[in-house]
View 1 (tube, rainbow, N blue to C red):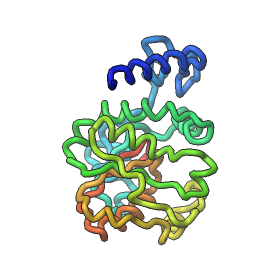
View 2 (cartoon, helix red, strand yellow):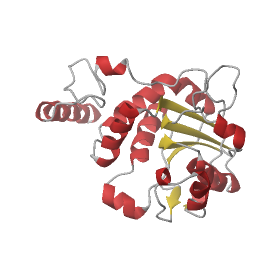
View 3 (cartoon, rainbow, N blue to C red):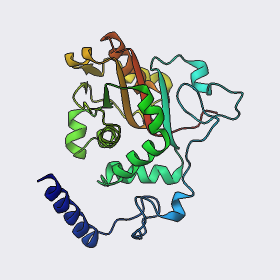
Length: 245
């Protein structure tokens, strides 16, 4: 039955690909049969995070002698460690916008695959008990129809064979978008914005997933709650991140 289901699933995907040919998430040209997510031309231009990068949050830094980015030198984060796939440049910004606001949910598969390609060994070494997405408030979730962080989290969890727990953390305050605020306002905006499920007490190591990291205020707000509940280590996996200098 499982094999039959897989055949049906693959057949349905082929039909969808004929009716709605997959497009490059960057330039939006129709992909060739041997391309996935991103065309070969754009794949070579994507701003992957390469060393040197901040040992705490994963932001790119100027030199290998610089252990921590400017933000992490100024403030102490409570999460254990962060890693990110791409720098948040203009082409990535447009792709993330389409993913979140133009219902391009199919991007999540490519995002998850690229994160695993680059960091799979490191993530497996964390020996996480669960993968948790940064939650949306129920009003925003209803308006958008999906939580982009949850889609990426599910792709990561499936590939790592680690359970995904989208209902462990809830956003109980419909906060203003962080991008509209300065650093001080970001922290104030997130105060008491989240709550956690009692089931979190059984977890010791968690991978927290989000699409964009700027100052780490969201990750810290959730990490504080998780640490108080008995979680020992919180690793943050981010799709794209700002510069650390």
